Image (cartoon, rainbow, N blue to C red; front, side, top):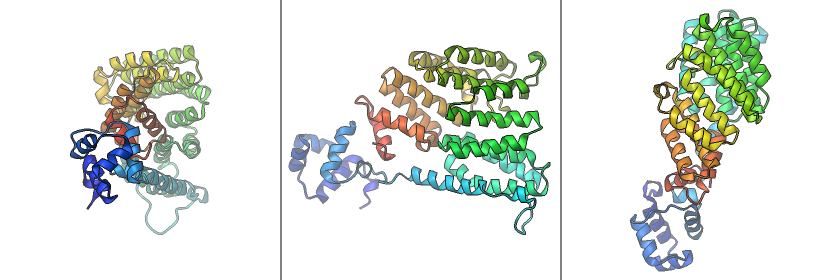
Length: 396
């Protein structure tokens, strides 16, 4: 019998019978009535509390994940570790420094390389992180080989490959390795103000995770900023605005609400000149993105009520549905944290389940988000859906 295919009630019945326990003796060990056990096994009563699920698992001598049909060793953790190891290996090659591509196969032509980089970014924006972790080692190898043969022709592809690598590694909480990728992007972009600003966006993500980014982001923002905002190209304004947002979120993380507000106001002045629905240089910058950044800043500053109020307005904007799935799911996680600030576990769980439906890897593969899931699931008022997700992920 495949226990994983059974509903939880029937799984309890199967495991109870395997332990040669009658319903009455099982109920006695749990401190419940025989009627309660019978309703659970028939599916007439739902198991909603973590403590109850743990008690049942203890009596049945199984782990909670097995009781819910999950793996005792969460596959997400193993996949993440293997993917990061392969990316680390790809970043450890030095064909560029040696000046020639290794091997005898032909170097990928620039157009094909650009398409592969584009595909990697799309994969990232759809939050398909495990798949991207599979793609990146080969992509990095190809851009290294191309750069060794023709540095100038492959320069943009190299910068973009490092950018998307850094972006993924930040998501996976691999900050040191992300810093290496972002630093290489900055080095490869040196001398080109646009490429340098692009690389600085990812450097800002890394430095935010390390708690020191504001001065670097502001320097990069003002370097790319046009002298006259009214005459600035939307591409430049998108980069400048994104860098200002990064600086603002860093200020919020430092507890500097005034600086965060001023920088977001500055970004907000640029956003209408671009509008929503654009994604210049993979920034997704626009009016709605700035509003979501205000939510994230409020969360960092510990103002859950402000964050929730801004969230409710932001998701009613037309620009909300035009944002990448990764961006929307990450915002919903921020909002879940805001609900935790106001002790509302039910709505925090609702946000997490919505994020999971939009981009499941954002919830299931990001260590920081998994911690939020575990925190919500441990709350006595947490709904069954989030409890089952947490247990299935091996978090409680």
